[in-house]
Image 1: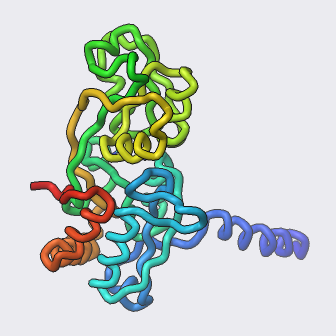
Image 2 (image 1 turned 180 degrees about the vertical axis):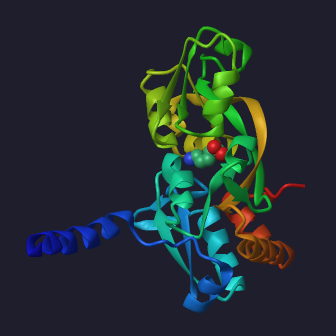
Length: 256
Ligand code: LYS
């Protein structure tokens, strides 16, 4: 009996630690704590990425501005993109700002805030490679796992293969190394990547689809959704959004 009690007292706290604390909280709990917890990927330039040890990017700065409007400190969780929706459903953070495009499939399990930018998926390939949808016939495409680029690739007819990668840096590296004929990613990420790698001999090609990108949060967390949308509207109105957009893209990328 005593052995069993000792065993249980050793095992229970350990299992609680493994599960981790519940952190997708109601607005009142967030406000009381003074800190909001946001997740991002940290591998998607120029939206959320590392500059040396520093997490930065348009979405990182935008979330900081939103938290400031809400009078809260912001704490980051860096989570792989393909695990974020599951982690949100497990209450590991309050919201994610990681370039989630709206899809009906995702909307079954999480809520979307109002869009913070509009964009689209674009083909990139070697200069003499398949730069249009038509030219992709019989070719292989590299995409990041669990993204709308992967969804778009699945809809293309006649592809030889779709190869999935953990992140866009890996998909781009595969294209550079000729492991795939083309890469589909966000048009701004393609531009930032090509600007940083001018000698790679890779060009941006045709757009494949367009999408609206939003923060995601736990389903039916209504007051938090209102607060995030309200703060986003405020930073859009007071010029903060425009300044950040100009800084990273030299244009205003809001949905208009
Ligand atoms: N916008 C794409 C999507 O919604 C990609 C987001 C993040 C990619 N690192 O799936």
